[in-house]
Image (cartoon, rainbow, N blue to C red; front, top):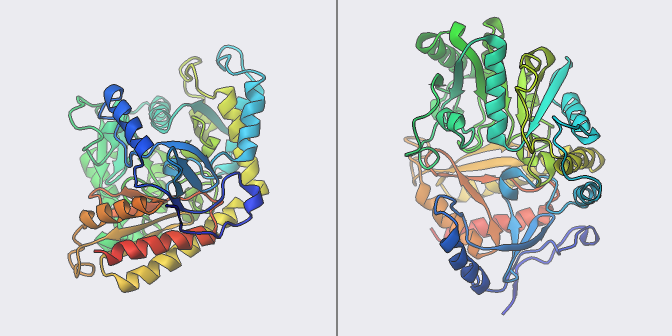
Length: 456
C-alpha cells in the first residue's frame, strides 16, 4: 500500500525525483534489512548508523531508499549537500573533469582547478587582506593543518578550544572535542597542549557576550597563559554541541584578545560555512575577520574536499613540502567546488538560506507554544536547532530530555523525514536542510514533528 504524504513539489521540472514524501514499506524496508545484515558482517560496529535505511538515489531535498521510500532530508549528510543532492551543475562539472584527469597530485604536477578554488575561498572568506589556501580531504584534516600552521607561525604549542565544541575524530581533534563518548573513549593517549575553556551559551548561562568573554579569557590566562597559546579554534555556531549561538559580542571580544596577544584566531566553519547560514561563512554574522578559516562539508556538493584559508603570512610560514597530501584538492572534487560557488551565486542561495530559517523558526515557535518540552529554538539561516527539556523545567532547571529526541527522530524516520540529533546531552534536534528545499516540504516535515510530539 502506497502512502503519498505530500504532493506539493515546487518547480518539479527542475528535479529528477519528485520532491515529495512517500512511505511504501515499513522503515527499514526488507531490502534495507537484508543489506544491513550484509553490512554487519563486514563493517565494524564503530562505524555506527543513525538509521539503517540504504539509499539508492537522491535529488534536491529528497533521498530514496532501496525499498522505494522517499524521505525529506533535513540533514543533508550533516550539512554536505547544501545546494541539493545530485545538483546538476556539480554533476556536470565532476563528470567533465572525470573525462579529463582524475589525479596527478597537485604537489607534483599542479592543475588549474585547485588554484581556482583557492581564489574563490580568498574572495569569499571574511577579510580583504591577502590570503592563501591549502586543500585537504576532510574537516578533521583541515583542523589539524590549521593548528600545525598556527604553531609553526607563532612558535608556540598551546591550542585553545571551547566547551561543547567538536572538531573531528583524528588524534589531535579528539583531544580538542568537548564530548568524549563516543568520539574518543578508549582511543588515547591523545595529543597534548589542548586547553578547554568555558564558552558562551546564552540559554544556559544567561551571560552577555562581554561577561562570557571575560570568563573565557580569564580561564585561558589563568590556566595556560596567553604567551603559550598558538591559536584558539572556535566554531562560530557550535555544530555537534547543539547549534549553540554565542551571545552578541562574545566572539569579537575573544578575537580581539587573541590579536592583542599574538594568538592566531581560527574559525572552524566546517559545518557553518558555504552559505549554510545565509552568508558564505557564519563568521560574517558576528563581525569576525578570522586569521584562518577551515572549510569542508558543503564545499564540493558531496565530493570529499576541505580547506584551510588564512592570512598569507601565516600560511607561508610552513616550509615547502610541509603541507599537502596525496588526494588533497583532487581535481574532480575541486571542479565540483567551483560549481558549488557558482551555483550559490547564480541561484541566490544565500537568500534561500534566510527563507528556510524564517520558515523553520516560525513553524517551531508554533510547536513550542503547544509543547513545553521545547526549551529553546536557535540558529541562523538553514542551521536551526531545538533543545528539548523535561516537562515543566524549561524556565528553571532546563533538565535535558534526550528521550524525547530519540522518540521524535524515530517517529519522523518511520514517517519519511530524516533528521539529526545533536548536543552534548543528546537533547537537541538540528535542521540542516538543502537550500533548495521548498517551504511546502518544510511545512510537511513540521507536521510530522507535531504528530510525533503529540504521541509523547
